[in-house]
Every structure is written in structure tokens, then in C-alpha cells.
Amino acid sequence: MADNRETAEDPKGIWRLIDRIQGDKVVWMILILLILFSIVSIFSSTTQLANMTKGVSRINIFLEQLQMVAVGLGFVFIVYLMPVKWIRNLSGVLGFTISIALLSCLLLDIGTEEKNQAVRSVKFGPLPSIHVYEVVKVAMVLYIAWASDEYKNGGFKFLRRLTKAQPKLAFLDTPLAKRAIFIYAPIIATFAMILPGGMSSAIFIGGIMALTAFIGGIDKRDVAIIATGIAVFFGVFASIFYISDGEKAQRFGTFVGRTTLGTKLDTVEMMLYGEMKMDRVKFADFLNDIMQPQSAKIAIHEGGLLGKGPGNSTQKYSVRLMFSDFMFSFILEEYGLWGGILVMILYVSLLARGILIVRHCDDTFDKVAVGGLTLLITCQALMHIFINLDMGILTGQTLPMISHGNSSLLCFCIAFGVILRISKKAYAPIREETEAAPSLMPEEQTGPETASETENGK
Image (cartoon, rainbow, N blue to C red; front, side, top):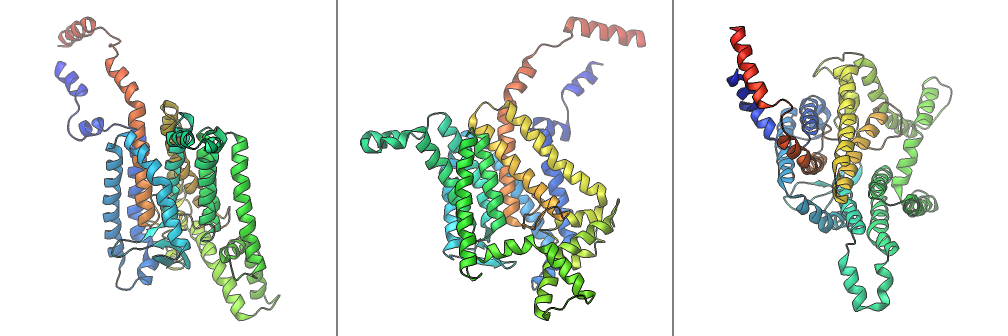
């Protein structure tokens, strides 16, 4: 019996390794399951991507995905092993700086690449292309976590030194000025710089940044100030579009066009039934606009309860971006309703675990970073799902950790690494208390009684 007890207390093999991994084990499991979904789905859904890329097959794409998964897991472990202090300092130094630098490259057309009729990536020499918005999402959440921590704990010491040297600038050391400089302005500036490249991305990332700042402790009045600044830039951008008759600020026209897909669908139906006439070129444009979302809905319908099975999707030949913007539709077609429910459970579970981790955090940075990153991942996932279910306008937001996209995968791996590292720190006191707690059953009772019971059993 003693040997059995020692075996139970000292697990061997893989269970011993799992027991040694700290951090939230549910988040670890969610991460692993999302990666497995990604590997299987990418292999089957990238037929169109292989056709669009000369000399590339689905096997090449699959092997590339395996490589990126390995690199992504490397990023997870690197961040997981970092001291939280390092993560905090890097977030303050690099978060906003990297975001502004990459967004400036897009605006100034430096190293830009056009993909899917939109300029959202930059490429420098032999380095792989970087999807700017994917980097900005994670970087700005971490920056706001740093700024919130500095504000709450009396940071920004360089401002104090500056105001002592220049008394005329004393107003910069006030709470309102600090919020305006380090929270309001970065959020509004980031939104304004994203706006020319993607209306929906600007609105989504701006909303996530505002929610993260709210988690950091700003009140409703501060949120209203941020919202007002965002609304002003939105109005200016729309005005430029209409004043120039659509020649400038063209992404606003794309945004408006996506909000009228229902009208375009009605128009196409009327054309097909001979109820109205239209120029052939315009009709072809209307048909092209509605083809992908309609084919995605067909994929959902054909998937049914149990799905067609892995590799049996037919709509992946019709939907050009099935592997990214319509990945959830693909999952429903091949794995059915149950596969879709499992994916939704993973993201909702991540949100629940994120809330639990936040409750155990003592530091402002830890709380805001985990809360903001969890919101980013789950909100983007739910937005992608709702759009695929025809419950919102097209935004181009991918399914985190599952859709194809190297920049997206690596950035979300960093986000998971931060969540896991902070959960490790947050749970450390609980783990120490648990290990130090005395046994509920005294040893002098459990030992002899167990021995006598064994003898009686014999």
C-alpha cells in the first residue's frame, strides 16, 4: 500500500512533466486544442491558396504551417519563462513604438505589400512579411496595460523631472495630462493611423484598446473622451470620401459596400428573375461581392449536424478566403454543428479562465494585460463566428490561432505566453499555500490504520 501511495504522490513519465508545468493548465489545453484544429483545418482548406500561389501545393502550405506552429510554441515558452517585470518593461518601451513605426510604414508606403486587394502588410528585405494590424493588436494591449500600471502607481517619473527643470510645464504632471498623453492620445492616434487601411479593423482595434483602458481603471468619462476622438476622425474620413466622390479614403467606400450586401443580393435576384436590368459590368461586381459570403452560408448548411468529414468540403473551391475570413464556415461544413460548438466552447472557456486569472492578480499590469489579451482573442473569435453566421458585416477578422496567417499565429502565441506567464505568477501563492498546508488526516492515524486494514484484508 505504501508503494501505491508513493506512486500516486510522485507521478512518472508524461504525467510528471505535466505536473511540473505551472500556469493555468486549462489555458494550456485550450492553446493545444486550437493549434491542433489549425493544423488539420489548414491542410484541408487551403486549396484556393495553393491555386493562387505558383509552384506551391497544399503539402507545402501544411509543412509551412507545422513550422510556424513550432516557432509559435517557441514564442509561447520564451515569454512563459520571462520574468513578468521584463514583459512589463518591454511592453512600455516597445508596444507603442512598434505600433506607430509599422503603421507609419503603411501610411508612407515603405515596404508595403498588397494582399487580397488591401495594403496591410510590410516586408523588409529577406524577412517574412508582417501583417501590421495583427502586431498592433497585441502590442497596443500590452502598452495600455503598462500605461495603466504607471498611472495608478505614480509612474512617469521623467515627467516629474521635466516639470522640475521647466516649471512652466508643471501642468504635464497632473493626472488629466498623464491620461491624455499616455492613454487617450495613443489610442486615438492608433485608430486614426489604421483608418485609411481598414475601417472595420480600426473600429475593432479601437474598441479593444478602449475596453483594455477601462479594465485599467479609467472611468466612463475617460471612455467618452476616447470615443469622441475616434468619432471625430471617423467623421473626417467619411467626409473626405464623399467630398472627393470616392477617389480618396476608398476604404470607407468598401466599408459602406459591405453594409449593403443584403441590398446587392436582392438586386442580383431581381436581375436573375428578369425584374430589372443592369449593366453587365456592374452586375458582375455585385455578383462577386455576394459570392463569398453566400458560399460560406452554403457551407454551413451542407455541414449539418455531423459535417461532411475531414477533406470533403466543396465550398473551399468557391470561397477564395475560406482558409482565413471564413474558417468557421469551413469547420461547420467539414465537422458539423458539433465541431463548431467545440470551437466556441474553447474560446468561451478562455474568457472564463482569463477572468479567473485576473481575480488572482495583485498588480495592475498583470490584471490589465490578461484581461485585455483575453478580450482581444475571444472578441475577435466571436466576431469572426457571428460574421460567418451572417450576423454582422464582413470585417476580415480571422479566427485566432486557427485561420491561416503567420503574423496572426505568432502574435497570438505571444499573447498566450503572456497570459500563461502571469497565471503562473498569480497562482504561485495558492500553490505554495496548498503544498505547505497540513494533511487533513494525521499521519499517525492514516499510516497504522492503512496497515491494519491491509493485514485484515489479507
